[in-house]
Length: 157
Image (cartoon, rainbow, N blue to C red; front, side, top):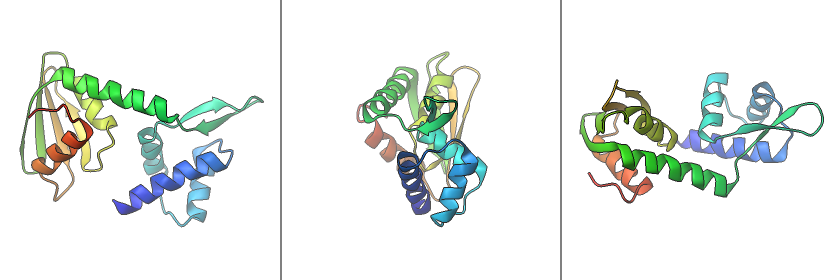
């Protein structure tokens, strides 16, 4: 987990410092910085950081980080979707079950995915009113709830 945080910090620094047009170029810079990372992992990192491509004003596109205000607004939207949709949270071992109001499972799962919790391996949205969250080995449902409450102070379990 420590390596991931260092890598995310390096990705942000590289995007701010260099004109990066592709993942291959970014991978090259990361390798020079001493990070061994696959294209798939980098792709997930870019999604987590909400990196986008913007026109360079000439004939190409470069990676760009969202501004702090934009990032906070996006995070607030995910938190709002989560709070609006969830009914209850329970767990057993490293599996968490989030019950949702009818039709809200997709938006609740998306919110959990986009809150950037390192403890979450992934989510599966049920057809209508259930979200399954798989946690990393050694992470309990109680750990998950503590981190969720840190991200969403309004959360009641």
